[in-house]
Image (cartoon, rainbow, N blue to C red; front, side):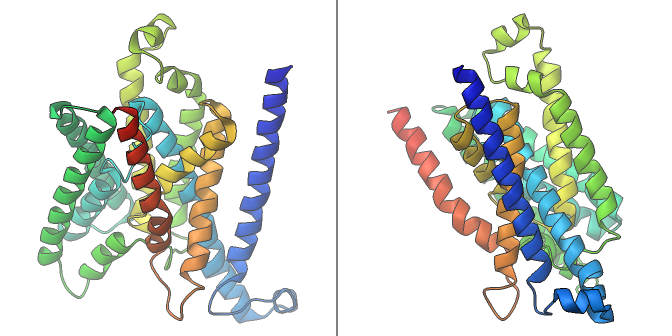
Length: 330
């Protein structure tokens, strides 16, 4: 009876989250420098149609897709590492992917597929470096992974500075600055299909192996007894989540804290770790990124980087989590 009530409450929360996502998506289509009206769209105003289909719809789709992907990726990282502080940007994945994208822009090609593959390689290298550095650190693993992530982010920033110095000021430098700032401005309909396809495929695979993912949060011996190939599954799911993050930030640039806040928000709503928590993590990510993008283009006369608003929420949230983990291990 109690499980049935919990399931009903969780479904209700998912429905409410979906309604909130839909409301923010509708608001995102309206908000911007050029005003859109229902009357003008119905009347066939050419300029309003161009703004809607060429700017607002691609931007809104990217915010929803990117937020969902980052939220699910954050859930995967936190579950596999059994660490509430693990997230793509905290452990250096996003910074590494940005450095990989910058490397591709300067030395290989600025094409979408090439940039995404290079970003993926940079993200994988960042994950491996974070794990290696955390392994050498004594003390709480939660704090170790954060310290390792900070070190990897510093290395990534150094690499970015080098790539900026080597970049063509007229053609390549602006693109690299774009990755650093993080923005949904300039997203066009032609850029979305590849990243959308990658995200949909990655999320589908993660949900298919959702049971095995949740088993990885158990003790390694218990997971093996339940038939989970722990090492292979952990490695495969980390690669899939990293590839999804790379596909997102290859379009949006570096966006901070969405992958940290969304899974925690979902766990606060469900109270545990299960597939419904993963769904809510994706929805929470979509809400956070879409809301932040709306603020980025509405609170000032000029458009601000979306990471400004995700960081305003995320930085205090991270400090709170670190303090709580430190108190736990005292």
